[in-house]
Image (cartoon, rainbow, N blue to C red; front, side, top):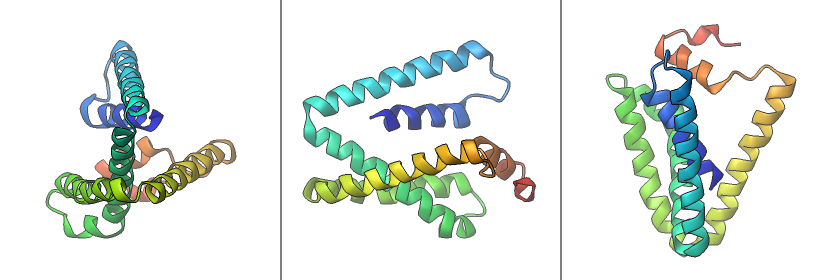
Length: 149
């Protein structure tokens, strides 16, 4: 459930916090999202069906982000953030419902997605050449995608 807390932290950091936020607000958001991740993990340990539901929602979110980056961003030029959220919801709900019946497959696929991302992101830190997610987001917002390495 580390990914739940990390996803919440990333969302808070990118979407809510302004770029010039004081350092203490960053620390507060880290502790709040860490606590949220621990809480979700504890509930998931006590209730397996809740854990399966969370994994299904996260897998659907990952798939929604991939589909948005591959296809939908070309269609939703007027309001891309709304297109992103709708695509994530469109994939999260069905995958979460499917996860109740096919939970073994969903756990395997989610572990593969999360593990492969963490492996390659970790390698990119040491080897270099893979841009930081925050840098990609900044370049996207400022329409400077050609400045990425």
